[in-house]
Image (cartoon, rainbow, N blue to C red; front, side, top):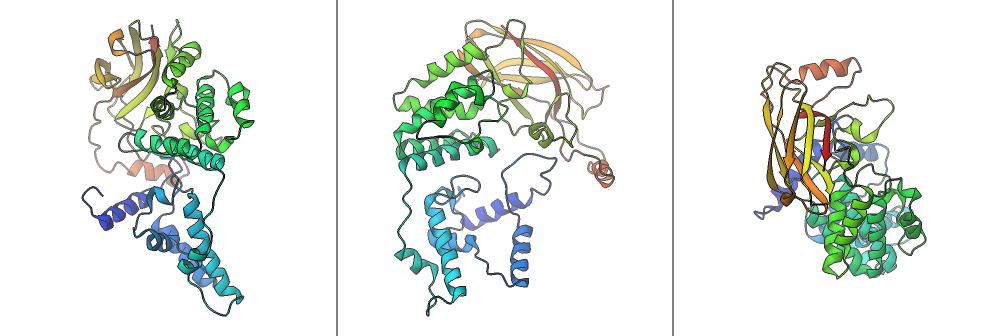
Amino acid sequence: AGLGDAEGSRADLLAEVDAAQYATLAFLDAPRATTLARELLREAAARHRFAAVDLREVFARHTGSAVPGRRLFLDYCHLTAEGMWVAMAAVAAEVLRLSGMTDREEAWPSLLARLPAPAPAPEADAVAKLGAAVHSAHRLLAGGPKRPILEHWLEAALEASPGVAAAMLDLLAARCAPCPAVLTAAQQRNLASPYPLALQHGWRWDHLDADLLEAIVAVLERRGTPARERLAQALLAQRAIRPEGTDLADPFYQWEPLERFFPEVMDLADLERRATYRAPWPVSSFCLICDGERAVELELTARLPERGESAAASLARVDVNGRAAGALRVGGGWTTDRLGVPAELLTPGLNRLELRWPEPPTAAGDPLAAAVERLEVGVAADLHPVFAEVWSLIARA
């Protein structure tokens, strides 16, 4: 896309979608229809004589681009008001053609030209755009920082209706609370407001939502609301590391919810739960909440399962807020190591702690053979390497 190759970009996007063939036990991701799914739908529609409206063709014609982008999509699947307008014009044109209610066949572009554009209430529009930021935070496993797209939709929500800032602050307060959101005054306030967020907007996720909180703080600060200090105070009052230590391997303190395998995210009854945090990516990120005035000691108990118990220990690099803090020793068997993080690397409230794992060894033979054998007898199997397993990551002031 950066090189201006729109068709090549679209082909790469579709290839990435088609690569998601095994969502059940790999990663939680955005819902998607692969090329195979689309072909099955098209073939079945033709076989049963159903009319099919292919929105890919409709959207490409409407926008002049093969990739519709944020103009028509709020997130991975939810349409903007314009997207709904165009999609339903195409459907209405097909219904009119099939029904025989008119003597002449009308193409959807001409029908669209005669239909008034939808005009949702500003409050509803703002909630939809705030929801786009929430869904993107929860379902976008980006190759780079998420902040730009989250801030885009938060800014759009505030442009639609500035009062939605109260909903953002309520979401911030509920996330910091040491209890389910449904028990918080913040959620009750929000439900009674003109900007009510429903369960699908993310009240029940098991993590702090650090990316979303930081994006909310950034956009509100730019508009003159002192949200950064408010977030820091709420976190320190209710979520700061405890004197006896806080285990950052707990799902709540994991920075990115999608940096886990599917069973660890979904808590499904028919899948075994692991006793450890498994790292399917070369970097694992955690939320370190502290006063920024004192050094913090980290105590990591972990192993590198791909190496075998007899493997020599290696170093996992530790970064705090993007700055090097040192390294922790970790080997093929369970080991415990400690590292002091100086106060000058820390800020009051939320800090991003990253563990950069050693590269795993190259697998001998066919690494998928064992997975295939397990799957054929109905046993869960990993299709991805595990960079590290963490029993605990204790932070103490």
